[in-house]
Amino acid sequence: MKQLLLLRHAKSSWDDPDLDDFDRPLAGRGLKAAKLMGRELATRDWLPDLVLVSPALRTRDTWRLVAAELPAHPRVAFAEALYDASATDILNQIHQADASSGSLLVVGHNPGLEDLAKQLAGSGSEAKARKRIEEKFPTAALARFVFEGDWSGLSSARLTHCLGPRDLG
Image 1: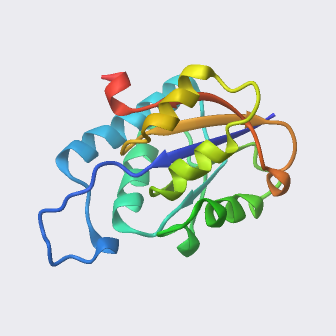
Image 2 (image 1 turned 45 degrees about the horizontal axis):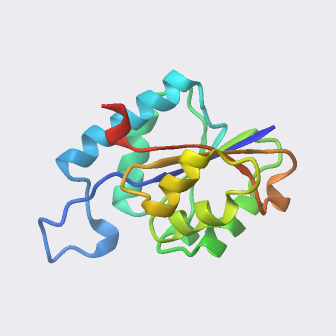
């Protein structure tokens, strides 16, 4: 069984209006949330083999803080195509993932991640998690999916969880 984890970057700072969107750092709240989500991944043993990260500063920083909480260091790829990506763009990146990876984490942005989570949530999905995604996919939110098959054929999966930092602490 494969595991797909979709993690929206943590809360970013808007303190410097002259910064390009790509270069926005995490806000203080985002720093705490990213660490919290990393600890939760470790506690639940939802450890990725492969991580795809948007190259924007806030996604790289989110991943750095999450990774510091994990017991192992997975392979990481910074994918330009994930910045400002649609659900289709993100799914195309997932389809190209190494077939030997059993667990994939994507760290990216809305609205693409939220749209993809809604699109992927298939039959057997946990009702509370599905409702949560339909309502909102906040910063540092994590959606977990499981499915049988290969990354290249992923079109639907069972949504098992949707967690946000506020759920954890």
